[in-house]
Image (tube, rainbow, N blue to C red; front, side, top):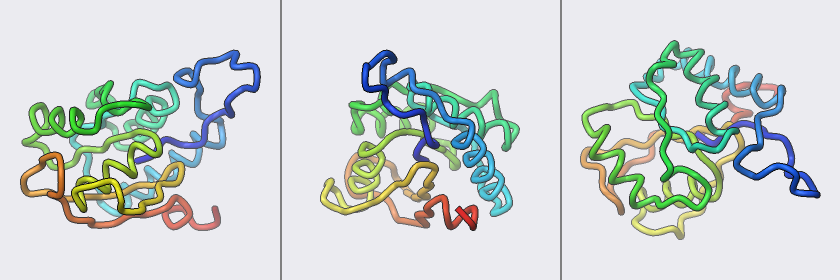
Amino acid sequence: MRHGIAVARSAGRRHRDADRRLTARGAEKVRRIAKALKRRNVSIDVILSSPFRRAKETADVVASVFKCRDRIALSLNLRVGGDPEAFVREMHSRYGRLHGILAVGHEPYLSSLISILLSGDTQMRVTMKKGGVCKLSAAHLRYGRCASLEWLIPPGKLIPGE
């Protein structure tokens, strides 16, 4: 899942990019998206989030809707500039027995990760809008082509009228 709508980068760079928070509208959209996922019987065993504020806040909103606040973990490998290969190793070693892992992160990182897991490289064009969600399945998770695409849903399809 890509994080929700965040405050704009300030021209004067008063705040670090990592400190940008969700807007009120962004948090509300994430709440509505999470409710739509819950209605579709999506199950979440753990939420892995980038440590950047907007991603953590997105994870918190989703966890609140799914009543799994105790199942959020931060991953430095999901931050902007993170290492996707290390993230896959982390998922496999720490969470390999779980089936419902929600990763909350940023673009273009998520699109590249999805492309790598589906095709083996970063050439596949994938668009993850803010609040967009993608579901992959993999029998044996590894860095490279190992997954199948279940669905990729932009926020407007989860919450009509957006």
